Amino acid sequence: MELLVFLIFAFLSVFAALVVVAHKNPVYSTMALVLTLFSVAVLFVLLGAPFVGVLQVLIYTGAIVVLFLFVIMLLNIGREDSQIAGHKAQLFFALLGAVTFGSLVILALLSLRHAALPPLTPELVSLEALASTLFNEYLLPFEIIGLLLTVAVIGATVVARRPAAGEGAAAPKEEAQP
Amino acid sequence: MTVPISWYLILAAVLFAIGTVGALTRRNGISIFLSIEVMLNAANLTLIAYARQFESHAGQVVVFFVMAVAAAEAAVGLALFIAVFRQRHTIDLNRINLLRW
Image 1 (cartoon, chains in turn red, cyan):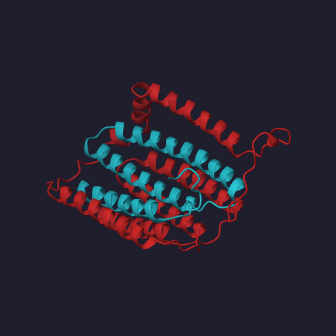
Image 2 (tube, chains in turn cyan, orange):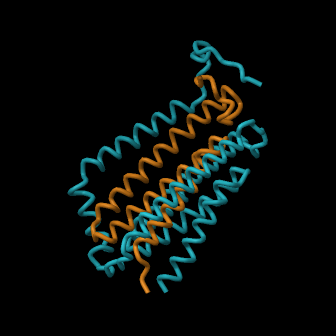
Image 3 (cartoon, helix red, strand yellow):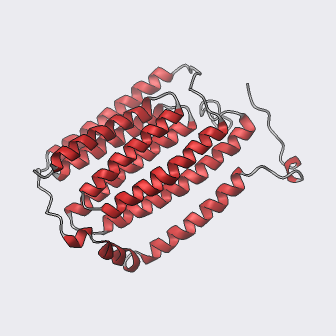
């Protein structure tokens, strides 16, 4: 049963990741990313991390993907249509690098013995134990993450906001290159 | 039958390789960001798999931090794209080459 669920969502996530990478239209790519993230969330639950799976669905598919969709809508990005010389070589070397990396990792993993995972314990799944690890051992990184998010939100607002009428003249507006 | 940990790691490696290809070959800035999200998720899958293997919560805690950093990165990066788009009217990364040699 576990094997069946793993296989279904593993293939689903790989398929959706291929669509993310290969589709010309960014909106379809984003929708395929939702499928990838959801499949990986199911695998998280299968691995005994239900809270992380829920967070994955809430934060990634609920917040980050919506942010992506908003920006795509705001910028009105269409399909990639400009053909650039040298693109074929770029694709070739990227594929070569990915295949090399993937086969190296898989070779390294195949040389391991296929040890079965230890059975799930209630202690590993429990939210209480996770919270006590987070707020005791990792309290300082947790607070720093809060600071980082605050800085990121303020920075994003400052960067993305339209310059006010008075200060717009100070920065020379550069013409878009054809 | 339970799934051995190496299957999860192989799946994560495949996802990471797919994301790498996307990040290296796409020209649209948004698509490159989406590929990077796929790579981050592959890394998260590895962390969770090892957290299960070693029966520790540290891996899950690190995944929280990775998610938070990914959210911050997406917010700032997309804001940068909006700012660049205002100036250049494109986010095709082959045409944003002012600082390139």
